[in-house]
Image (tube, rainbow, N blue to C red; front, side, top):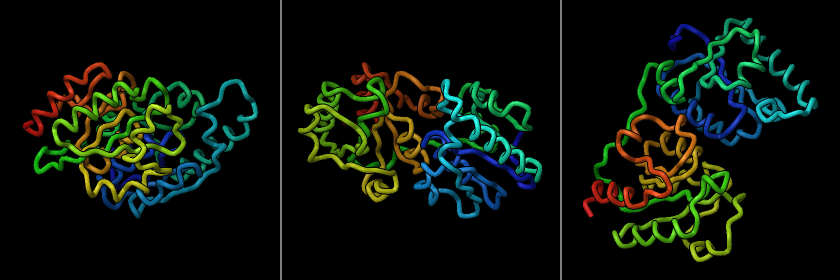
Length: 276
């Protein structure tokens, strides 16, 4: 299936922040689209990022609980309610499109008319549907100021203090300024306290929108901040050892994706980009 302006589409944003940000980014690439988005209440803070013509339907947070269900039948009524809501729109000639073929999408939406992309890379699925590419930022006139997201939603997705020390020392040596951006829900060790004066604590991404006017460079370990940075066309350096199916191909082509043990490679790429 390919995007067609003559069709009506319905999308769901019921899971993570990152999933919603990817959709927002691609919706902005199209004009005059007839799109409805089911948006969970927990993601309400993202509503202003959607194109103004998007029809947003806010839904109870419990409808998204199907994606976190384990063995609790308490979720069953909300599963049924979500199915009915989607069927109502499909009966109005809306086309349901899903960009992730995870088993829960297949199971919960069984016997509902839909199109599910089965490609391994999520960005490529979006590109195929919206018939557009995710453009990379040209490295010209880049500021020497970096915003750093040091923590993800798990220890494996976070920088440890040794990593942070080596990173910040390397940036300082290259006369690059930086500021850490940390979600106020993150619990970090006392060893990070020495960086608190150079840290901005935020609750939602809209609180840091003004900061990207000062910097177009991002170092991150987290998928949500990655998708936020792509949406804002920032220059991205990503450290991760997992979830690579959520990373657009251009970052690999530009050698901007690193494992946590590849700080030397990162500094080599940085030197090539900035000539120092």
